[in-house]
Length: 308
Length: 308
Image (cartoon, rainbow over all chains, first blue to last red; front, top):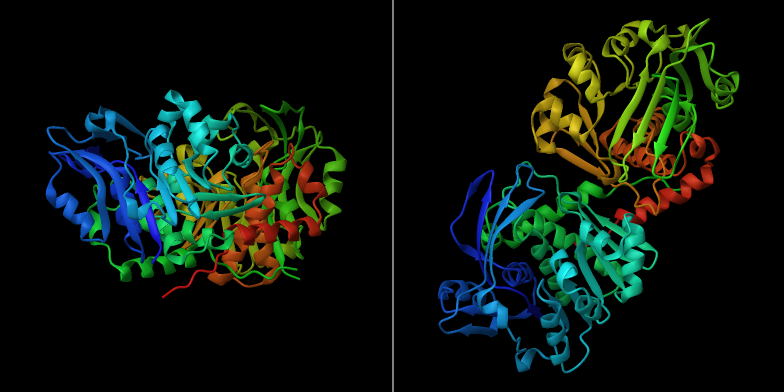
């Protein structure tokens, strides 16, 4: 069974959206990535940090899904990373109301010995120096290193981010971030620039407008499934990344053709994530539901035109 | 050969974009629709009005492409409809600087006798009472009536617009307009509401984010081709509509499966239209270029995932 190493946050999120609000609930990039990847046949581990306020039931929720948490440091007397955000009416933009780094501020990741030979490494959104530290701890070059990041690190740690970008195979980034990183408005040109920085594959996430996969001069596009209701976009990008990395780990095939499938799988899982607050939908999602919606994805884009 | 009747403006456009500006050049919905439809094997006619300031070479440009202009009224001493617009830096929004209706203000469309039995009627963006007048002049119910409209008519002639919407088979409309028409933010819900107003098929155009085709509970999505440069979006929506209607007229098949193909053909042609100012790219576009890019469209979205 393929091994997937995930680094990212385990967190408390509090969310306000036009549809309601939550108290502190389970969140964090590694949580969403791990839950999404667990829908595939993989052996995965999370490297992260929490305080002793992080409920045992949240850890159990991960271990029950065959996710190794021996790389999750529990800081006694420490508090878990906390994020509070409020979505605007169109759900495409949000304000961050609270960010408390807490134990994350001094986090030194330690990769478990039995995951230093992981096939795929998924570097969730975190300080680039933490992402780099994980790469440096690997015993051998993984078959695929996937990195997710955001504008915050471009604003505050650009040089370190650029350094880690030279070490990876796939970057997942949203459209505005791709523009910020490259000063190119055209996403085609932005992807070319990012290719030149290192990654063979560039995935540009466009939220409700889908995702683009670039490889040399080839482009593949996966739409987002048009939904009647989007309830809470929190974690959709991480779920996409987790589905993408999980599928590639399970299929042990990193060809461009299979990366297309991985983008579809990631988009498919993300379409569930947004239907409920936080991780709720991902916790209960069944393989039957996933297969059924995958057929909808195929119906959405597949056509049969006569090409001359 | 299938017959396509087109109603819409023939116009002078003056365009400012971040890439430059034009003097008065050939524009108008019927122009773009006609040029796009002429890429397919159809017999088409335009119903429109111009002043005697409209150059003969523009009319020749249409007739050379087998477009019947006997339904184009030339008002002696009158001036042709004129629109001047300025695009913002992202090309997704624009300001209208000048709108001179001129001869369009009193336009009474007259459908040529030999097109009163057209297979497909493409009602380009115009006052809904003009669109209705064209429908009423047909000798028999066309196989397909396609209507394009815009927010201007929702603001100013909503009741007449709703009346003509009850008479048509396909509406093409952009995302913001679909939301305005239905008061629904979700495009899935908006399409359901528009279905209930009459049209069996609803096409929602999302510009650089592609187009959605809704039919009952089925959805098909065609991406816009990611381009290195977008030069001038003017006429892209009309070119989409012209490609859509032209393909359906040529193939004489109005099944949902074939409408999918028509959406792809329309998107394909629109991807060329934006590469140059005005109609320039569409005038010189060859069938070989069209076929080649159609293959790119297929590569962009077609995948081969194992469905359980």
